[in-house]
Amino acid sequence: MAKLVQLFVEGKSDLTFFEGSKFRDFIALHGYSVTIKNLRTKGNVLSNFEKFLKLQGKNVYATLLVYDKDCCDFDTKRIDEILKNYKNASHYIAIQELEAWFIADHSEIKKINSNAKLLKDTQSLTNPKYWLRDLFYKAGKGYKIEMGFAAHFAGKINFAIARQYNKSLDKFLLAFENNFK
Image (tube, rainbow, N blue to C red):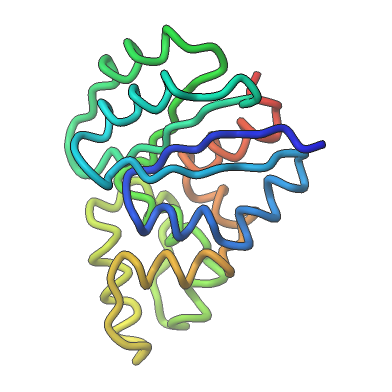
């Protein structure tokens, strides 16, 4: 029986990505199943996170919050205050945005546009959404925004490649591989 992980995300595009086949295959390989809750539906992400933690069932093996750092300084004090009251709850920060994880998949980026300049550290890119939008547009693949990026990479991302070029993705995947220890 797979161990249940509750994953909290902060938007529809994040939900789309984590519901995708590549993430589902990865977690299944490591003996987990996951339920995903989008916290951005109404109100503040962190207050919603705390409310749902209080309601969480006992059958959850681990609870994760995936939170975007975006382009500003990020203070985890509020998250840490919430988490200290819950066993097996932790947070993982997508440095910049989840889209930086997508850009780290060099093989898929080259399939989209063979002339794309690959980045050795996608966390250093200040605006990954604009970078991806430009990539798809210049490749003649249409105009895409967050939902389009998430839908595209949900079934195509190569985690083995992407984790080499994005430390926050690697840390997130290692949590599953190391049984959240």
